[in-house]
Image 1 (cartoon, one colour):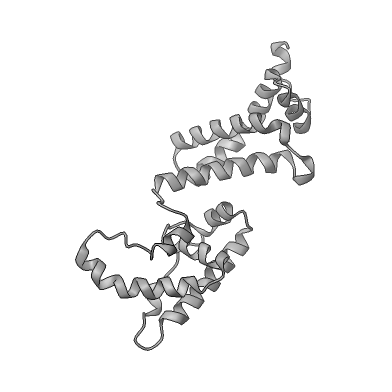
Image 2: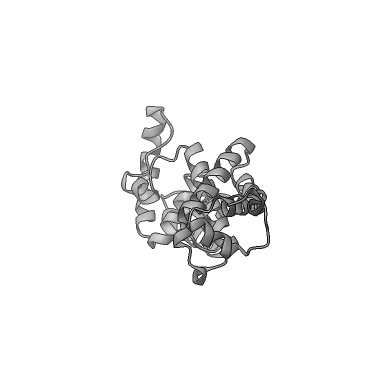
Amino acid sequence: MSGGEAVSDSRSDEALLAAMALDDEAAALAFVRRYQRRVFGMAKAIVNNSALAEEVAQEALIRVWRHAPVYDARRGAVATWVLTITRNLAVDAVRLQRSIPAEPDELVALGLASREPDPAVRAEESVTTREIGSALRELPAEQRRALVLSAYYGLTASEIAVHESIPLGTAKTRIRAALQKVRAAVAAPGGLSPAAFTGGSDG
């Protein structure tokens, strides 16, 4: 195909994707030029680092090209699909930067291992950790995951929404409900102060 076709914006997003599925490089270039700013903007908003956002954006657009053959318009608009891919990659990049060691349920199963290396501090916190772990295990799975991602991994409600593929409002509700239940369970006489679990930001 000629280079002139590569810069044409006359085709719809769906038409460009269909052509990309057939390895049409001109369509791919036109698609990238159409979406690169939005994809980079989404990545930058999540990772808050220009260099990392560039990497995320590049990988997102490559993934769009690779998965063009399986795009299904019935599941949403092209823009929604592209930006969802971008958000997922950006959140993964944030998680790697924060060195998240395990999935939330794995952390609970391991007894919510302390991130404090001092053995004396670990000994002081052992009872607290057991009580919190016990309270968490009583929560519904989706609430447990949301609270651990918030309180232990420091993810915001927005990041949790993307990570769990749920609406932002649902993420906030799960965090709030889980926090209330854990506080109630561990704030009994002789238990923890309600301040033991403060939760993450709802940003």
